Length: 478
Image (cartoon, rainbow, N blue to C red; front, side):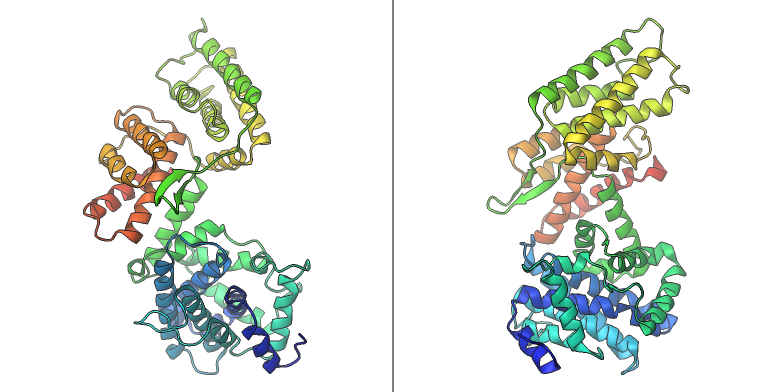
């Protein structure tokens, strides 16, 4: 249908599926966000987080609207709270001001998402009255030319003829080289506020710059932030900043196949990984086993022995995961990084050690060429500093931790987690890839238990134990 005035915009929206409407609302609100900079620093300091949360929640749930969120009722509650938080700011910003319009747009968009997740009646205690399409239309508040906005939106989502809603979030928000002048001025003011304390606001600055440049922050990271409990958001910007740092660090250092929730069985299972030809895997294993044996048996007294970090890391991978391309690659790459750091320092410049280091690196690289999963995880591993033993004075009871979380897994995941726990509990040198996998798995399940089983008798202990585990990942504490 032709769209040439606001009435036609309304009519077009009413004809759309709810998924299209909430993507439109989120996109509108994102384009209005710079106007937030028109508010004073005092008002921003008190309320900016509320608006940013509302917009992140709205955008993430719109982005994942065609998939099944693991817990839609929890997501709806998060969206409703975010909407109410933003509404507080509406009263602080002068009506008719640009900041007021930016907040209203975000608030109406988050109301549309709440309606989408739990129906037009909304959550009883909050209410989201009106259809998703009507609420999405309200996100146009303050737009001087709604018709142009709608046409721009349609152009992106139908760019290649077929409907592609997620494309709207992967494009530059403003296709022209520069933002409209008034938006640019307000964005400069908003960035000035966010830059005053980058430790607190730095993520939000990067987050919006990602949308401006058509390169959004990792969507899984955004989803994890959106699902943070309301009690965390109530503790303010500094607290949320630390939570976000942990989420981003965990995403960067995820070097193991992820756990996913089997929706039918309601248990966690290990996700399928890339499968490489058997001859490739056999050659890789034999090549490294031979190089390792040569280095261990060298007559030069190179210092490598059965208890060395590199030996343990390589052998554990060869023995426990001979057919898993990404885990072999990350273990080999981990050991090669360790050798690169230690040869010439704690190890002599021994020929057999250098050969082993080179073989580890070359084999990992060859696997990565064939396996996107391995390539992704080795890139994450590269961001980790060489670690020490995982044993710390106040380490939690990892065996008990494993027992609790494996109540929520299938048999395969249970065996992996409990075996990893025994390795860690035994003390000594623990390979980074093993620590990373264990921490990521128990973190995944602990978050799920916190969301879905609030009455769990060990929840408080579990959360504290996982919190200690997350601290092991801090490279600055290595």
